[in-house]
Image (tube, rainbow, N blue to C red; front, side, top):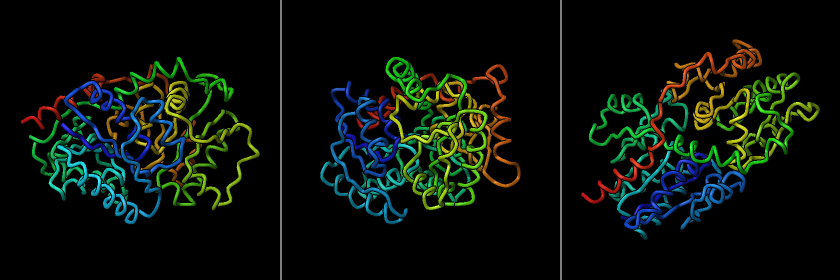
Length: 366
């Protein structure tokens, strides 16, 4: 069985690590890794292949950044050529990026079956590029691996055949279990930054809805800057966010409590997440990792595709609008404790990758 896996962004590397590790153990499976280059900063890309034990990509397309249409179009053209060369039994994609959509469309047009991990997630906001990518990818896929029951409900409501849908749990939970312990053994990031466990806020901002809106971006960093007067705040800064702040002439250099650092490797990020008092993020993956590591999370968006986390209280929506000052929202969320929150088994038992590989092998054998 030959599988072509398309990856392009940081969270996809993490998810792929859990599945690709099992592919390597299966002698009948040959996986061809295609890295689109959607995230091309070394700290957001190459380091993950080293830390997570992923093999070097067979193809690195080097597409880089750009407007959504142009970037997706270049990916579609390049991935199509890879598929024509390799002619795999199936194409595997993860999540909701432009790389995901480009891979799925290229394969579907060549009549190559598509398997989508994290199928069925919906924010119900079609203004988000990620939402369009999710919906379109799901509707050209032959195997839809749903992490939650709500994801299955969304797919059935949209008319996707139940025979294509498999609830397997979340591969990021697999990765959290495996790499959480490893990070404790190898990461020195807390000592490097002079951080005390449970006494800092970790923030990540990268989505276009926040970085491309100067008013929203300023509200977020004004809140973090203010919060850093009384509590240490650490921000591993995404290149897109750094450029947006530079264009907005935003200066936070005078506040020693606000630590703006370069993007970190996965194991260092896991360590920062595990020991934070609060995580403030617009990342879907980081929202879940906060839950895995039992850290309250503030999501800097109007909605989230991980609705069960909001319903359970682990995640609180904190959009950077003008209804309530964002700092007040973050301070309130910081008061939550583990005792106040449950920890339901939303995302399976940590064996999602095993189920995915088993289903894919059976499907291609039939």
